[in-house]
Length: 183
Image (cartoon, rainbow, N blue to C red; front, side, top):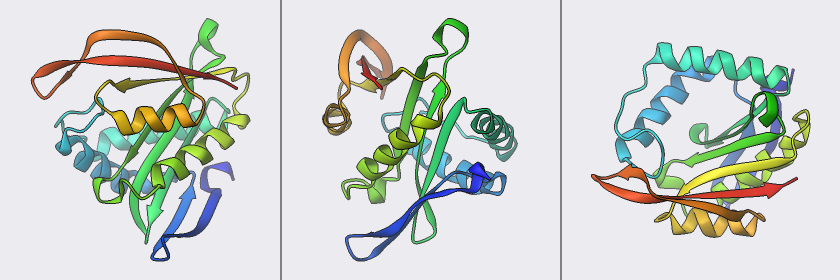
């Protein structure tokens, strides 16, 4: 079954046992805990300190698993030594935008800078070939997130727009950079 498929299993830096796979419904608790940690950090994501309930995460995950089965989404979870350390996804748009996939990725703070974001992004992009009709992948990134911008460019993403002050971040407005990649 696609939902439980392992797409990568191996070691990084000789001490990190890595598994990248599709999520299972039983991952809801670890996913809500993970997202709450990321939200609390107030890092470069939509969630800025809000708490995600287990009920919310279960409903969200149920919907994501349905979209994965219909080939409307890719969602991969990255585990380091059996701890959830990253999540990435691509979800297709609707109707006239059904050929466009929106990309997102997060990595737990203690695992950043170890190449795990690059590894996870590589696999989610490879898996995106499963999506029906995908032609373009888009993403939004905070202009201050220089490491992410650099990584996205290495994967062939190009800037196509910028919304000045598009994100409220730490009590100030930060530009939102829009990027795309044709597939």
